[in-house]
Length: 190
Length: 190
DNA sequence: GTCTATACGAAGATAGAC
DNA sequence: GTCTATCTTCGTATAGAC
Image (cartoon, rainbow over all chains, first blue to last red; front, side, top):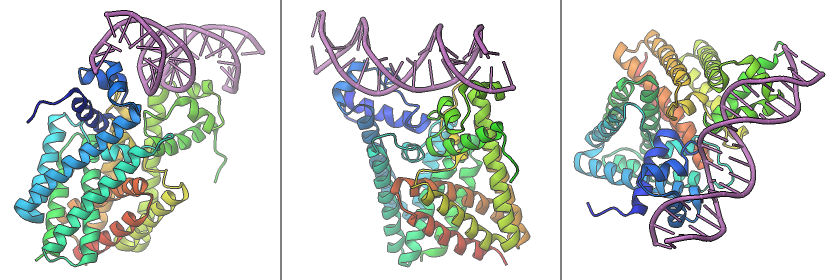
């Protein structure tokens, strides 16, 4: 991995903090400290302030998910790929002592104040993920309507399940959802 | 409906604001204003401060959901009942211009500061909802393991889908999830 | 370009007047 | 019991020294 610039470090740190705390609870002060940068540097790199940081953090999480999920599905198909993807989330949740979460979901459950750019970035992420999944399901023989509604169900249920695991401090919900999705996907592809 | 006391009004208002903004973004000041009560009254009724209000708001949402979902399932069975429950959520989301959400999910995606009582209340709510659904599925012929994992999938996917609808300002995700869940539930019961 | 110091408002919470 | 005024801390953001 190439040397990470201070600017990139801020975006990565913001994505982590958004997933843990949510948008409103993530302060620029703490983000700067967390990333080892002075407060002023943040506004130097991101003239748009907190909103700009949030948008780029969501886009970073989007790109990362597209890559990880896309690679897993390409390598192992929808069933195995989804299993690998859920396993990654289980590790994230456990390794953070049930505190880490998805920054895209975090942004989606908060009313925007004045600027809804972060929310729009979240909407684009959800659309890209569902399109990726639906395409894969179609390529493995699922009918178009079935592929679309199943793709939405997969994205929504993984997001919801991660939140349930955090509240219950247990990976049991994620284990069950993984089983349920495996059965479901097997039933709609060749 | 009986006359609602100022205290009850504060709890109901808190549940609404939590679903829209999240826990950290909901200020006691605005809650008091929103409920027509002075700031001091809030601390009179809730000596535990914001945390106590949040716990009671989550418990209120829990009880309301248990009643609405329980009644729907009792009357129409798992398939029809779930359809009615999802329709209720669609109305809530549309009538709030895609701003209202679930207070239980909102609490679950935020790292607790010092007191995790609201998060624990959210965990109890999720457990009660999944138990309610699993029991209904079993009573309609689903095998135990299948009922449990499907119940989790239902709760998680509805929570996640409501968030997706808010981000995308569209009810399409909820429509698709409703279809997917209907197909799925039909396939596992008699 | 980097960072310190600070302005200004709003947060949670409380004291104490009525 | 109800509410106003206020304390302290923390938020976003910026000015300006180096």
